[in-house]
Length: 334
Image (cartoon, rainbow, N blue to C red; front, top):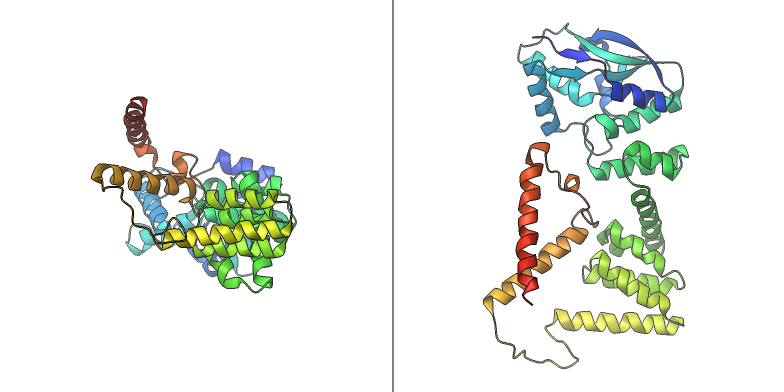
C-alpha cells in the first residue's frame, strides 16, 4: 500500500501567513538532498525523533492520510523545510521492502526566491504541525528568530506556539547569563536554570548584590520562587549596604539549615519523629517543588506540559482530581 500523501489546510494557512507561494509536486526520494534537509534550522537539538517516526510509520502502514511535506529547490536537489520525520518513516518502508525506491513523495514546493520566507518555514513549520517540538526547542527557535532575523517577540512567539512572556523571560535570562559570565562567574551561571536567571534582573541597583544572589541560588539549588522572594526583599532595601546584609544573612541561614542548625549554635531537635507526618511533608514538598519548577525551571500550567497523550488525558485528569478531592477532605477537618 502506497503512502497516502494529502494536502493540509493547516500547512497552507501557515504558508499563507508567512507569505509563501507553492505548487504541488511529486518526486522520488532520490531527488532530495537529505543531508542538507536534516542539518538546517528546523531542529537545533536532534534531527530525528524516534517516537514520532514510529508513530508516522504506523500511520503510513495503516493507510492513514499523511500531510504533504514542504520543500524548496536547492542546487543539489529538493531540500525539506518541514517533513523530515515523515521522510525517515518513508525510508524505513523502503528498507523493509514495503515501498519501492522510486515511489513518489507528495510535497508543497515553495516557489519564488524569498529566502527570508523560506527560513521562516524551516524554523517554524515543525512548531505548528510537524515533529511536535518540545517546548525547549520552540523557545530556542523563537529566540533565534528574534536575535538573528530581527523578528518581534510578539510574532516570533506566535509562530513558535509559545507565550510572549515565556519568550521575553528567556531573552532576559540569556542577558543575565552573559552578565554573570562577563563578571567572571560562568561556573555559577552554568548551574542556574533560566527561570532562576530571570529573577536576577530584579536586583538591578547593584552588580555585587546580583552576583551574590546568583551565588546563593547556585550553592543552595534554590527554586525560582525562593529566588524571586529573596530578590524582592533585596530590591526593597534602602541602600547597597542593606542589600548585601540581607544576602549575607540569608546565606548564613541557608548554611545553617544545610548543616542541621536553625540558629548560630548547634541544637538537637526534640520534636519526636512521626512517620506519617514526616512522609506527607516530604512528599508534598517534593510535589510542590516539581510543579513549580520541574519543567526546565518553569512551572507546569497544563496537561500538555506533562506530555500527556490524547488517550491518557481523561484518566490523568481524573487521577489528579481525586488527589485534590482527598487533600480537600483532609484540610477541611483542620
